[in-house]
Length: 554
Image 1 (cartoon, rainbow, N blue to C red):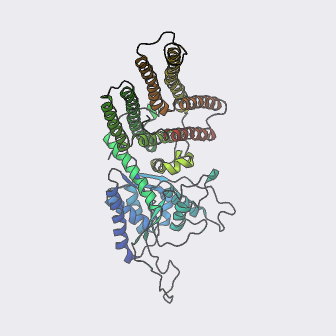
Image 2 (image 1 turned 30 degrees about the vertical axis):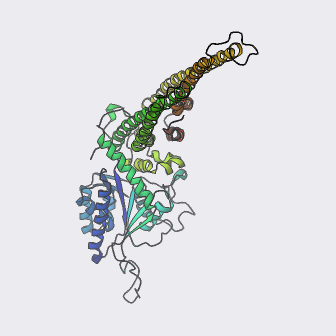
Image 3 (image 1 turned 120 degrees about the vertical axis):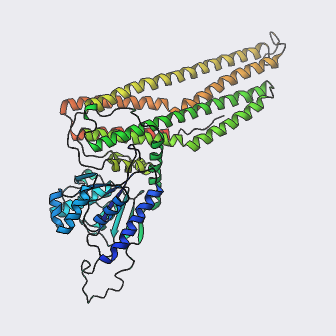
């Protein structure tokens, strides 16, 4: 599997006390579901995000390692402190699994401390950290696997019911009002796990009829399973395309001396490189398709004009051939899906760029938090990719991002505004020339009709072949119209005026940001503003690019 792929992350939550008689069924269910997912999305690397709590956590970690999956362990407390909650036997299993993990870290808090009205019952510090670890797993996973019997959540709780509720209903309280992604494309894979009598508060005398409604290991999906499947298919598609393109360096985000020190940052930058290269490749296909269709539309218009006016009857064959080429070209555009892939892979690259710079600057914020609602719905797979890639220990160093982010983006937008402005000015010049020529041809035709045609009472100089000259004037005027049609089909679909305006506004924004950092320093507020504005600009770009579908106008 390429190192430049998006990992599909399976999070785990579940019961700590498992019944001995259920272990075989639960292990078979977990292994079976993981194997299914790995077969369904064969181009993706699978990672399990698991705090290795006793019971469900331990069982799932062992199943994942047996299948060759990577294990990332977000712990609620330091390993030494966390181990105090295990028996000697369980602690030995915890240490063994922790030693096989690829990444181990203490989770940052998703929520702030509880305030009145959020948790009606007091929550201990230890329970609070357990809850934060569960929420972290839920936030950074594509799929939450819950070994759980399906009981209702309790406000402020930290068990499987509360973590499932956070995924499906957003029941958590992060700072600044930012919430978990919920509802759209979210689903939980439940593996039914019965409680023991003691855990359920039952005695030997209690009537247990109906206590076990389903057999251990039964599978149930909660939430939008279809949406989640589509999301995973898009992720796997990107990974397949990444593997098909040779690895390289399309651009360097982080200064070379700092690259490779932070595994999360290194993973983010490598994936940015892949997304950037593939988006550029599909942008070229998209523009090439626009150019072909523009040429075809122009040739069809000219050919039909010659067929109609000059009675060049063979031109009808040229029209037919061009229309066939147009159909083939549109089929290629639809089959390669070049427009969607160009837009979405560009969005992924921009999100990863923002994510890399935030982490390099020492911020624990995720770029996915700043996605607009339309982006969350239209490109949910990208938001999940950003959350999955950013899983890992919080940033431990702070670096100045004035040069690598602010000034770099300022210069990029300045240069892009100039380049796009030149293209727009060229298209405007051609349109203006066409307008002048059209007026000139019209005046020539008017003078012809007044002096030698049928508009004058008595022609000054009657033309020997007036219909021939009328045909020539029609062909010339039609040719000019065909040229403007080409401009509309090609340059018009590139939204040049809007792009120039956006680049100029973003260049000004980064100039102001540089001054702000110079005056008040590199604060968290400035970093979040940079992230938000860059992703809002990308969202605007996506909105008008989606309207420029490759088609032909006649």
